[in-house]
Amino acid sequence: MSEELHLSVNHRELEIPLLQGGMGVGVSLERLAGSVAACGAMGCISTADCGYREPDFYKNPEEANLRALRQEISDARDISGGRGLLAINAMVATQQFAEAIRTAVASGIDAVISGAGLPLQLPELVPEGSALIAPIVSGGRAAKLILQSWMKKYNRFPDFIVVEGAKAGGHLGFKEDELLAGEAPSLAAILKDVLENIRPFVDAAKRNIPVFCAGGVWNREDIQALTEQGAAGVQMATRFIATEECDASQAYKDVLLGAKREDVSIIHSPVGMPGRAVQTPLLKKLSLAGRIPPVHCSRCIKKCNPAQVPFCITNALIEAVKGNLETGLFFTGENVGRMKKMTTVPALIKELGY
Figure (spheres, rainbow, N blue to C red):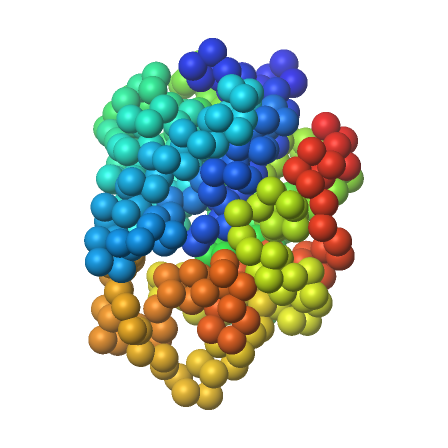
């Protein structure tokens, strides 16, 4: 572990400077997160409708999600054998943002990573010393705004920061037109921008604030290039999908294993952000029909109006994780075309040079 990387909580340390990205719905739950932590890295559970497997999910989604989250954290801890760190990924845009974080902290989670919006209230949801807190940002301006707010209102600083570039999968913190035009800044440029903007806060905190890079990171060479430019480590998501331990169905994994780069496109998500996904029958149907009215509502997104939303993203992601090609939405990173075979979490981490 780098001498400058000091991430530890509850007598556990991050031995390997690698974060597994949170993937919802249901792609990164207890098995994947626990297996990553068991290798000494940071495993991450996505809180996005994580209770979808509960029998009462569609009747009591809020209760089902929190019940499942508690169990997933407990199971992931058992799988980890007490090694590594366990995190949750909580989206600001979700209705249960605050409740999910409080539940996770009460269940002993080690870190809370938050994006899909500016997590300005995160410090008040995580008592100091209980868990690590980290925002996901896509530029120096957002990082500066968040850190200014946290310092002024709570006298708190992030324990680490995740910098996400334009090649990431799922929801993206960039304008749709710049993504479609290929004009978004490179991950290296974003890293430089963030490091420059947080320097005054690092000085004020009188400690290091490690920065992890995500979005298009594929191999050891990518990791080395980013660490040479100041990153403490990286976050990876798509590569962990093609592992035996990933919580998604094999059919889901097979869709991504069969996808080529030209099969991936930028979509407009009901969350209100652009996203990157594999072109499937669902997206083709949407392009023709314009709208697929929701059948159920799990009350997942704060600003969602079921009467107007183009499609139900929760249902589409649930169908995907089950492996339903016709009705599923398969989020992925830009480099999915490079993923050709199944592996295991320990083998992948070894391949990355850790």
